[in-house]
Structures are given as structure tokens and as C-alpha cells.
Amino acid sequence: MESIKDKVAIIGMGCTRFGELWDKNTYDLIVDAAYEAFEDAGIEPKDVQAAWLGTVFSGVTAITLSLPLKLQYIPVTRVENLCATGTEAIRAATYAVAAGVCDIALAVGVEKLKDAGFGLPPPPIAENEIGDTGVDPLRMIPPPVAFSSQAVRYFHDYGLSPEEGKRLLAMIAVKNHHNGSLNPKAQFQREITLEQAINAPMVSWPLGILDCCGVTDGAAAAIITRADMAKKFRKDPLYIKSFAASAGSYQGTMRSDYDLVHFEENVRASRALYAEAGIKNPLKELDIAEVHDCFTITELLIYEDLGFCPRGKAKEYIEGGTFALDGELPVNTDGGLKCFGHPLGASGLRMIYEVYKQLQGKADKRQLKNPRLGLTHNLAATVGRNVVAMGIFGNELG
Image (tube, rainbow, N blue to C red; front, side):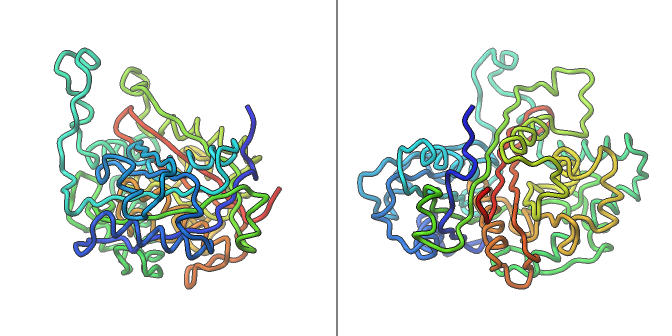
């Protein structure tokens, strides 16, 4: 299989503020994100040769992208892959550029959840696929319930008392709120204390409201081109090292030995991602990671799934500050889903936007010291049914 490493580069990005954006509709968000990206890349909409739109609930056709941007008869494709949708949009665009189908491509992720209401019933699936009801019972499990079961199991398997486990999750929330307080585009821009996180109103034990990401609106966009063209547009492009994705098929629910403390799709996707990018030790070689912290327990499990720390040892690394802004591998430097919320189609590209700014040295108060390689990760999950999409990006060729 041929690698895409260093064949494609990001030359412009844009990102809206995330939040309860009652005064903006889907088109407004697309325009705001895309035109920041156009200006950043020094191009105009007419220069785009193909485009991809990532959205789950906020657009039914490709016209949702082509209409507000007045794109002129170019191919536009809508993609959707649950919470990994934003990453899937840029992954598709990247493969098209790497294959020589186009030289300049646009990827946009957008979601308006506050107006539409996110509490929609799950869509029916084909009869006989799961029983004879046409409805998958696992899709009916609210996300906080599904993830809280993994937290309880993690505490049990690794000998954490309820108090120790709850405190550990609270430390992740405090870290991400600190980072989000430094980011003007985050939905929540205030710090919280450990006590506030521990004592927050309960959603599904042990997950309190400060362990959960919000429901929000937002959009992000990227302009990509061939790596050999990138410096014609800017001196500091971001080079794409690898993408990887993995989708499960209910293996967890079909196995009596499923442990509930890892996502196999994370493990499989990260192995493929590291192999293509040439990463041997992610903790030592990566400088920043943006991961899918829909709940604090999810971020903790991701540390172990992606090889940032050994199985069952996250406690030592969290308490040691490994993943803090000044730690060995800062995670969610922009505040993560915890502070941005999770407009599904936009989150993956928002994560890449943070890595893009960090590797260019343009992250302002949360800027890391000389980062070179960054990872982004999205996970759409419930018990035993997961979809993962990941990427690695660098500011240098080779």
C-alpha cells in the first residue's frame, strides 16, 4: 500500500468560535470558517478544484457547501461518519490530492446542534440486522451511561477507589478547562477547580456535568494542496504525515471477554497511523495531541489505547502532569471537546486547526515550545460499536 506521507500539505485553515450561536445559521458558519481559510491561504473560492463537506445533522446534500460559497460547478461531496465526520472530510480531500485528482481542495466541517436539538431518536436500521424490531438497542443507550460503565470498570480493574477514580477524572477536566480559558474560540473559557469538578451535579455516576462535553455549534475548514506546491502559498505549511481509520462491527458486544476498558478501533487505527508516519514511540516523538474527550473517561482510555502510557498506568501520568500544557505530551491544548463542545461535523477539523496553529507558533497564550509533530483523534463510540479517524501532521518534510 502506497503512503501519503509528505505528499499533501495544509496551506490555510479557518475556525469559528464554538458556542450557542443563535444568531448564525449553517451557511453563516461555513462562510466564516471557509473565508478565514481562504484568506489564510491567500486564495479565492474560484481557485478550489474540489471540495468535501463533513456534517451529520446540518446538511443533506453537497449544495449545503457549494451554495453559500458560490462554488462554480466543481465536484462537491458530502461525507458523514458520526463523530469522526470532520476528519473524514479532510481525509477524503487529502487522498484526492495525493492521487492527482486535484491540486487544491477544500474540506469543511459544520454542525448546528443548538437550533435543531440533539436529542433526536436514533434512526431505524434494516430489519433482521439486529433482532426483528428494526431498531438497534445499543443505539438507545445515552452516551453518558455507556461511558460511565467504562469508568466504573476501569476503577474496578485497576484498583481505584471511587474517590480516587473520580478525582482522576476531575484532574482531566481541570486541565482542559485551564487550556480552554486561554482560547478565545472555545465555548467555555473559564478555569474550574478540582473540588468543582468532583462535586458537580451528577449525570451518570461517576460522570458529573463537568466530565461531559457540551452541545454546541461550530465550523472549521482547511485548504490543502500538493506538498511540492505548498510553499508557493505560504512559508509555513503543515505537511500531512498519515491518516488512519477503523470501524468496528459490534465485536465488543459479541465477545464475552470484552474488557470495557479499551477501544479496539483506537488500537488498530493508531498502529496503522504510526506505521505510515514512522512513529515508534508516540509519547516521545509527538509534541501535541488533540483527542476525543467527549467524556473525561474517554480521554483517559485514549491515553492508553494510543500508547501514550501503559495499560492501567494513566493515573501516574495524569498526576505527574505528563499531558498538561507544560508536560511531556500536552493533550487538548485548546481545551478539547470539554471546552469547545462537540458539533460533530466540525470537531475533527477544529482539532487540526489547533495543531496547525501550534506548529506554526501562532497559538498565543497556550503556545508550546517548538512543536514539530501533532496528532488528532476522533472516536464515535458506544458499548462495543466504534468508529475512529486519526491524523498526524508535521511542520517539516521528512
